[in-house]
Length: 71
Image (tube, rainbow, N blue to C red; front, side, top):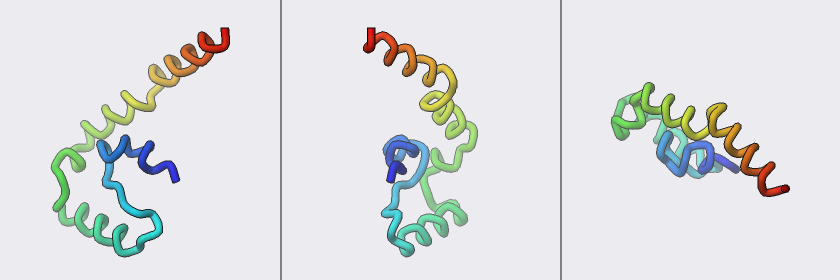
């Protein structure tokens, strides 16, 4: 489903079985009660990690890598 990649294998979010309403509910409850790792509640850290992984610089690098592979 791609969530593992989007969440950087749990580095910027909690991984759950997307078909399990119970797991999703439990994680939402934990987030709202701040019962998860403080790192996953640190908005600035999460923003920086997401930009580092998916921002324009990384996109440009991946495109250039692909172009070089095709040459």
